[in-house]
Image 1: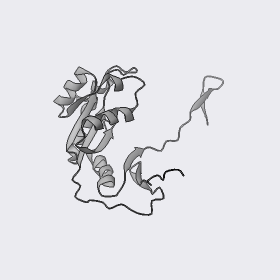
Image 2: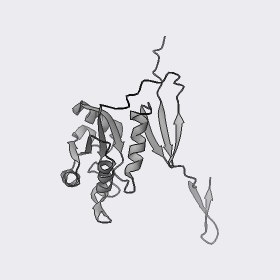
Image 3: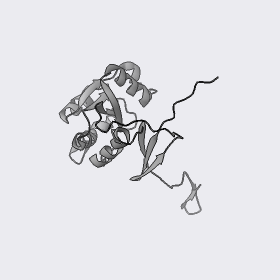
Image 4: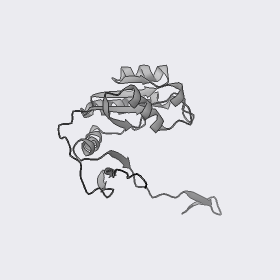
Length: 187
């Protein structure tokens, strides 16, 4: 007999419109409205970016790119701690200057092939006091503190195990060059 899997409740935030995915969970778990768990924001910022080297600390409108995300996390007022997980000294320095704590990730989770999940798992092992980890992408300069508050409410008050955001896009994946050099989208 296969082991039964716990049904999970998720919230999907799509273009500021929340769509609940119940995952067939008929029994809602009890929610502690005054959540006492340590809630940490975790921003992953590896130094070995291939496309744009050290993109996370490139200046954008007078602030390092990662600074915008750190600022949003701090300004949200919902996190007990804000962390940047990195393997690079300069990213660590910038993160601290912007008000974040630094988790020095190991070489095992600093490779091109390492998944975000592996890096988050390492952080969780090294910080067992943290009860909720909010993984925030480092490259979101337009992230507003309100979005972080709203997403976290789905975990702390809404009974969700996980929350993630998506953007609905309708764009062509292929383009065909027509006579005269005109591009035409192909589905």
